[in-house]
Image (cartoon, rainbow, N blue to C red; front, top):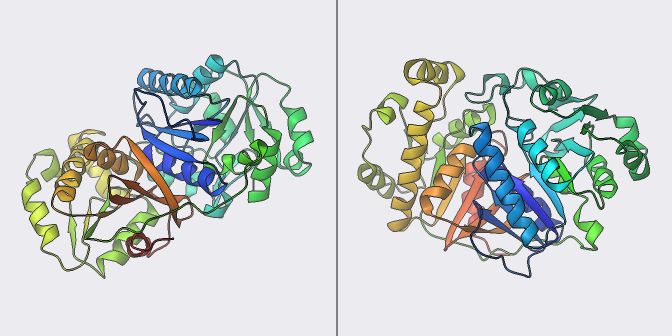
Length: 406
């Protein structure tokens, strides 16, 4: 193994696994820290944690355990994969985990760049943009668990980290790898500007030999070439059979996807109060899904005002935990009766589904959308989507793509 990735959620793990696979690496995504050794032919391993919103001490402990396992498999370069919208809070978890990993690996300067220009994420003058809007005006200010109200990543990270936080500006990045490397002669976390994919390629070239990087999946674009690896399209067998769509994300993009797919297929909305009070019967939901003549949608996605009302009524995490628990129970129940294709929207929801399925390793297939691969586990096809990823018709498109071999 050459590159080891510690990802703070499941969809982020799939995202960067796709980046590495398309760049030509043999990649596997592991669900949690494995107990045994990996396949020795792997060139990159991605450990998917559920640490983004975990208590800080738990997030640090999980991340260090993942790093140690990846190091034992032979990895020499490590990436702390975070969301391209820098999802965190003033208490963590990005800063504390990044500090711990840097100390563990003896890393000096650490480039931090969540940019993903292909998917509308860019960093300029240390500020994070989503398309043409500052992060704080992109809808992320209404995130139910990690509201992002400050687009200045230097301020956000400095509030969480015990290390100095610096900046590598766009001009330095444009001047190329040598200029970027000169900026690394410092003991600090360095928010690194990137406004185009080519910037990420230059950052990757500059990172040759660096122990640790932090960012979205784009930060991996230029790394495989440092190991002499050429791009290729990941293999996919084609998986047919009944399908279903789960959506727990409340992002603007996902709510649009829910509306678009609801106009085409049967849909069922999960009510937070009923989930908290355990009023849903999994067997009844399974019967409803299997009775439909088109892959149906089950969703809890809602407008910010609805989410805030549920938080006020039950507590910030209670409703989310109840809904995730329902999805975690429903996924294996559906697979047991023949569902073979599942599209899942939302990082927390995806984590719940994969945990419910008991999956340990995901095989990475081709992209369903920018940042979203098709993945396979024990004969079931999955598309695990971060909230704001994919176009309006993503659900229908992903289901169709799963059936086509390449």
